[in-house]
Length: 279
Image (cartoon, rainbow, N blue to C red; front, side, top):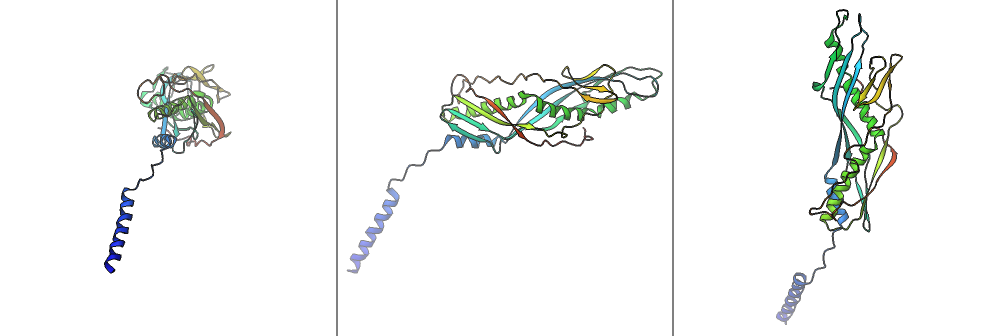
């Protein structure tokens, strides 16, 4: 009798083990393609864009003797970044909406080694020309920081360029995952710079009746021995509004999915480096 019980227990145990091994397992849940897109976008960490600018002006510094005229010209790169670590992506049918944090400026690149100058000379100018030029070179970084903030606040194509690149990235990913998309909307908060937080322009001793110019547009003048900012409208960048035509693998259609860029005003403090900081 004892052996019969042992045999029955062995059969039952074997049946349970066999069922555990050969029983049909539930099918794995399908992966949400939106989560895959979110993961891939966040791994990019940050998108960076630059603005190439050229500055020139005529300075007439007050010195002992005859006032010289110094023509100054130098290039710079204004740098902006968009963090993607907290990007949010939602899908409604064939429409994808991407929401990001605000764009923030980085310290501009000012290669003063490429600065050019042309100075008038006179035997009645009792000042060291190189010292005067070095004084103007020291103003380059503060001017570039001011213009970095100005472009961020007044040039909508900065945000448009980021939106275009992010839209292109999401379109590539959705195409590779086989997700049908007709529109990709990108929402980027607009940076609202608190009053008094703008970097200050250094004092420019501009020649009478002249302006300091960026890419040919006046941005500063001298009034009553004070440097006064001049408002200007930056031209639209050549990248903005021109979405690439993607016809290769990963593309949804012959053309990139269209979309909109919504820039919502949200107060975002912009860190301002000390005025004395330069390259």
